Figure 1: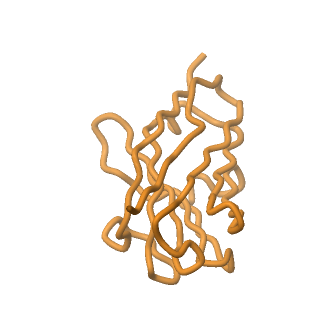
Figure 2: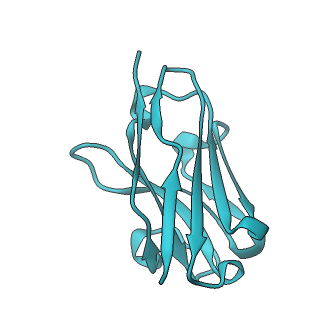
Length: 123
């Protein structure tokens, strides 16, 4: 059974940091790119970042460049999203997803999805 489990969400003050984890199982992790998406209340789900299979390349949306860092531990089938300098605009449910494409960007590029983890940035 394919599973993607996202962990690490919570409440953080503006300017703070959080690290999200996405643990994958049920498929050959090394063959998939892993992406993070987020969906704020009343808004469309948007891509945040992704990392290619074997960690060869990364993508970030402009609004998170320089603040977020994606990385992977292939031995543990886990992808991390380190989020720094968080603002209220980062408040959303964050989802991880898996794709067989080399550098998937859009929602339709992804085959498997995990449940979300809520990140709330508020003082």
